[in-house]
Image (cartoon, rainbow, N blue to C red; front, side):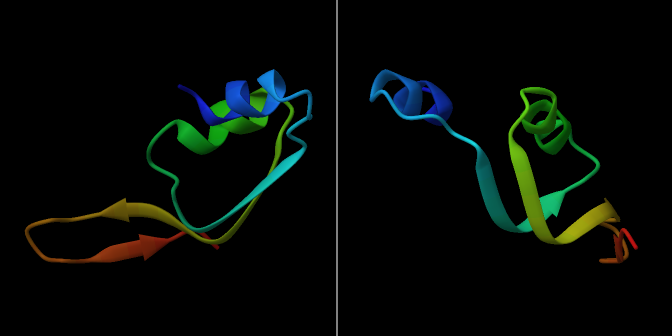
Length: 59
């Protein structure tokens, strides 16, 4: 079950969420924001290269 559905089923309203590392190259963060939920990320990974191990963070 989706977490936001659990919150709404309880009668509460989800207004924000915080994560340590957001994978910016995937759609999860954008999906959460499009639902009007305030999302704070300490770091956002823009890309990762599994061959070289390089991780690029969003500025």
